[in-house]
Each structure stands twice: as C-alpha cells, then as structure tokens.
Image 1 (cartoon, helix red, strand yellow):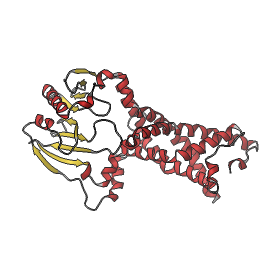
Image 2 (cartoon, helix red, strand yellow):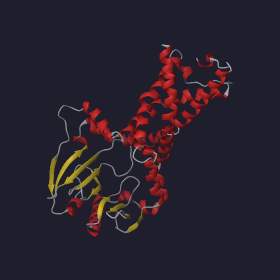
Image 3 (cartoon, helix red, strand yellow):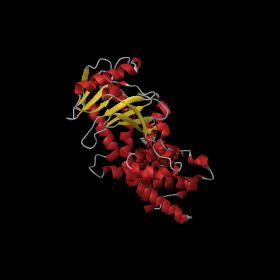
Image 4 (cartoon, helix red, strand yellow):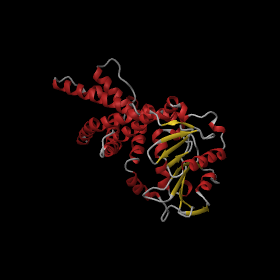
Length: 365
C-alpha cells in the first residue's frame, strides 16, 4: 500500500510540474476566451452589433444573403449569417478579405479589426501555444495526461489521507506555517474543482483528437447506425437555396462555396442563432452540381457518438449551462495556475524541512 502511495505522489509531482505548466497557460487563456463574445462586441460595436437584431425576420436575413451573394458571386469563399456575438453578415472572399455587412440593409460595416484578430490568436494559443506543427499535440497530450493521471492521482492521495475523515479534507488549518497553508489550499481547491477540471480537460481533448474520440465513442452507437443521407429539394439556382428557410426550425448559419478540392456548395444550419443554454443542434446540407440538396448530418438523425461530439464545445466553454456555467469555467481556468504554484511551494517547503529534519507528517493526516 505504501508503495502505491509513493508511486502516486511521484506521478502527481512530476506530471504536475510538466502538465500543470501547460494547463496553466491553456487555463488562463481559456478563462479570457470565455468572455470573447461580450468583449468582441464591446470592442467592435460598429461591425458586430446591430440594433434590434432580434426583431429581424428570417426572411429579411435570407433576402440580404441573396443580395450579397449576387453582388459578390464568384469572389466568395464563405458567407456567414448572424451567429453568436456576430449580429452582422461576414463575407470571406477568396482573396483573403473579411467584410462585415448589415443584415437588413446590406450596407458595408467594416473589415476585420485588430481585436477580432487578437481573439483568433488567443484561441490558437489556447489550443497550440502558438507552437508550429506540434503545439496541438503538446497541449492535447498534456490534457490527456492531466485528466487521466494528474487528477486521478491527486484524488487517490486525497482519498487515502482523508477517507476516514472527509471533513478534514475540506478544511484549512489555522496558525500553521506558510508551507502548510500552501498544502491546504492545494488539496482544498483540487478536490473542490476536481469535476470541473476533469470535464474541461476531457472536453478540450476532443478538439485535438477528434477522430480518435469518434472511434472510441462508436461503441455507444446502435449496430449499423450511421449518418442518414436524405435527398431534399431541387433548386433552380443557389439564390433559391439561400432564400429558402428550413422547415424543421433550423436557421442558416454559413454557406460555403466551391473550392479547388470540391465543386459542391455546402450549407450549415443551427437551431439557435445567438448564445443560449442547452444542447447545440446543427444540420449540414450539400448541394450537388445539379443543385439537389442532400442532408448528410442532422442532429436528431446522428448516431449517439456524433451527438456527444457536437456538445464538446458548449460543454468546454460552459455555454450549455448558461451564464453560471460560463462563470464556473472562467473560475476553473485559474485553478491550474493556483495548483501549480501551491503544489510547487509545498514541495519546496517539504524538501527544505526534510533536509533539516523539521518536516512533521502529523500535520498532514
């Protein structure tokens, strides 16, 4: 039994120093990114915000989409309708330009700003630390080790020490040295945020190891359950496809145009345009060369594994659980940094006191 505890301590210590550093950088950047929608709107009211956007009908929004498509036909890479913090239209041109337009009048509002680019770089930093080629694997690998070994070893050590008196594991000692205070905060925050940290790390790993997670989650699917490709309407032109509203409550979010890799048009739909609590439900439709629509990914028809994967983002960012969920994720992002500092400070305290025979284990039982 002692051997297991010693092994768990070593695992927890060395993984804490390595993975804890990566988790600290990802956690702090993630905490800031939680409020990206609100911060982006505050910093870019002219291009992202539209008065009374919630009163605009879908017909008006679709009409503007058609007008913009006809005006920029042949130049478009993608056309993004109002979604999340972006209450305007965003047109991505094949020459790399980004332009924002009013969803009702079609007037040009502006181009991509420095602050919008900042949040794009912040997201890349969160996922890759801006390390070329290997950054996503460094972050992803650390994330896997974080929730598989670091959190579980920490819980194991907490449980072995406090299983007979759990209340002590949730308390702070008084009138003790600074090193013991660091330990107390470390074990208290670790156990209080065990589940939020585990969920954040697990859901975060989905973005880097998506194919692997899909393969693992396929065991949850019913035998033979696959995407159901269903043929839909024939359109006389792509403008007709943009003009038509979805009959099943989905709202057009993005239109992707033919590229060198594919000559098909692709339409992505979402149930809710703006940020709200609840499940994320999407649908994707592809238009072939004859402009016949084929639904190849729709939330209610998806196998269970796909439904779970789709929820990775709203869970990871906390939006599935509304404002309280986002606040919890924001706070959780600071916890790895605090655990790294308190854990390291306690390690140095213990090492220093062991050297002079001053370390008393009775303070930690």
